[in-house]
Image (cartoon, rainbow, N blue to C red; front, side):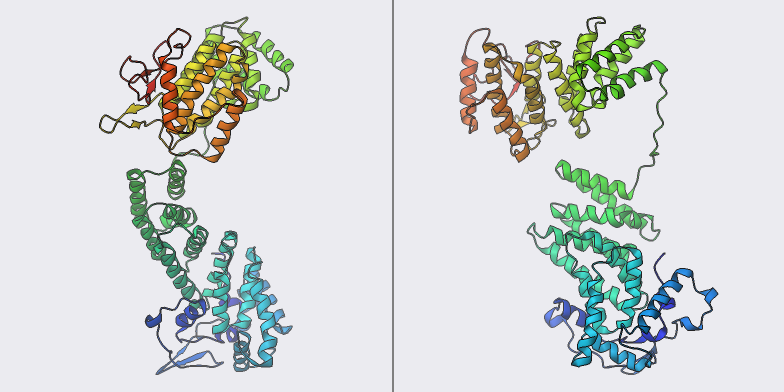
Length: 600
């Protein structure tokens, strides 16, 4: 709505120069290198451009300037203020001779512009310099005002060649500078009011380029695909490209909804999806395409990253009806005070001495049953506490346990939360689970947790939720997919927090025993990212420096069978059992699938 009306700003004689009904699409395609060989037409209709605004094409003549408005015939009261400023800028540029036209007639102006767009001769060489500077300024136009001024200045050099060159310049934007595309689309939309062939040629080129990029089966040129779809989206919002172009691109991507097509569709929806849905002419079709996309996302398996992209794109088009402002839950003043002490005041603590002062404040509370529940809930909600303050929170629990028996309740709640997170595969709980593991390790350092509970939790992280397929005999798990490495991070977090306190020989042997099972768990994963591999390497260096890691699954199985064959209570303290039976794991030579026995 805020686009500059070129017909009101620029005098009629400048808009008429260089217009013609020749085969401009063919010439533009040839300049862009997009010709189709035999499909392209040879030659074009002879045109006779005149300065009076008429174009003679074969048998008929069309007055293209009949509806143009001459700015000189308008009163000052009829012209908006913003258009007056642009008109003054344009007239100043013309008077200064930037276009090399001066005050000559329309016919002389038209001939002069033709040479500026790419003509020959000495005059053409002198005219190319300001036009080249104008084309270079396209990449530097990063504001609305700069784009509007650039559009008015371009009308001085209006010709077929200059319009083709503008299309080439706009198309040559680097794929790393996609932030320029909205301004380029605004420039094209502004000029398309007077020169429709600019927008038509650009949309035609973009569509053929999109089809060519999508037709290639190789997963390459992602940057070029993103640039292309962003351009189409911005032109759609400006009304230069029709909505059917965006739907055609969307439909082509849904036919092969995988890999780069997912990112292309999500980018399209993030850029113009909401516009397509709000527009009454395209709302019904947009809703059908959205339902089709969500059905495909549920029917196919996608990584968590792509699932998030699809959901975000869908919510971008159809925002939730829920209010963004969440009303704060009404709580008693005492509960608000407890939450403030444990969350906000603890975040300001920098030493153990400050934590002691917070414990004194908590001891002054009326420790009835209701107040006790509030304190335990605030402590166990570790996701609301700063990650680097969990050690101080553990010391507060240890000191508070001397006066009010809250330690066992807090430990049981933390272990239950960790177990619940292992049994339910929810991506939103990942950060909370990491905080719980860190808090559990800090509680062990404060002598609030027994070592057996630590190893029970470690073994449950690599066993809970695993089942054996009766037909294939392979390991299957809905809560721990073979491509997910989240539990690996949990194990690393817990061992890095409390592993340095395992100093006795028996504790070190138990750690070494677990590391064997943990290595086999890593070998069962299909792929381990580089950052997770670094976490595992740092864990081994910290817990057991110099440990030789197992290279394949056969070595891990062989070593586990030797460990399980040992007799003795100490050796079987962390003994695992096979799923569905009480037989010791590894007795039949497989030793792949384990679960922790109750009370183990």
